[in-house]
Length: 197
Image (cartoon, rainbow, N blue to C red):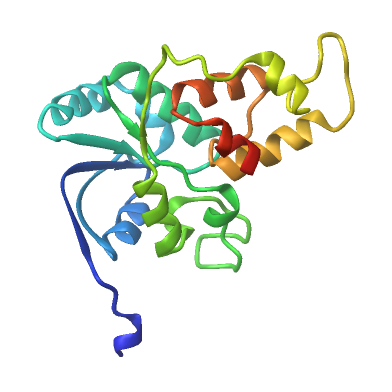
């Protein structure tokens, strides 16, 4: 059955970091690439995980973090990035990583890299960016002007809902205003990304 055969691209010198074994299997359908499996997002802060990734990061030209586009994935990404210098980050929009039908052990609406299409995974990896925590491209005031953060002492106006939709589109998981600003600045997003979202 040739219609299910895919061209497998090789990514030498790249280590992809994912949350689970199913994520790895999904990626390796399309890519010949080394993959490090965390086991779960919560293991990203473990001493053994961080020390292993520090050693591996010296052996690869690029370490690309590709985690689930949810809160746990965002927290794990932040933890790894805080401890490993020079990480690159790939993001899949939440809607493209959401399961649309029930599977064994999985429910409709579950979010994970394993549920993303070949195109979504390849696009995320191709658009990966190196983190830069000194970057201050975005300001709180600009996010307020876009209606993504509420002005001081103001409530309502669907700011949280609008911000969550934009964060999901960008693949960074739902954030409060402070977290959103931090993610946008640290992970190489540009104004065009935000306007598009």
